[in-house]
Image (cartoon, rainbow, N blue to C red):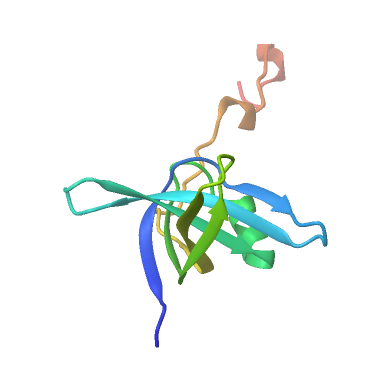
Length: 122
C-alpha cells in the first residue's frame, strides 16, 4: 500500500512551533491549495523535529511551498463528547517555490553627509 501526498500552496498564516513535554519540536501550518480555478482547499499540515524547526525558521504567511508527506487520520473527542475525525498531512519534506527574494538597498545602506566640506570630491 502507498500513502504519499504532494501539495503546492501558500501558507495561510505564520507556522506555529511548539514543543512536546519531551522537548520534540512540532510545527503546525495550513496551506491554501488552488483547485485549478474551482476554489481553494485549506490543508492542515504537521511536521516534526528538524523539519518542524526548518519550517518555523524559513516559512511565513504568503510563502509558496511544495510539501510532500503522507496523509494521516486523527480521531478525537470534542468538548461535547462527540467523536471527531480530521486529516492532516504529515510533512516529511518541504521546498521553496517562490522566486528568490532580491534585497534592494535602502537609504540606511548609504552614509549621509550633511556638510559639503566632507565630500571627497569638489
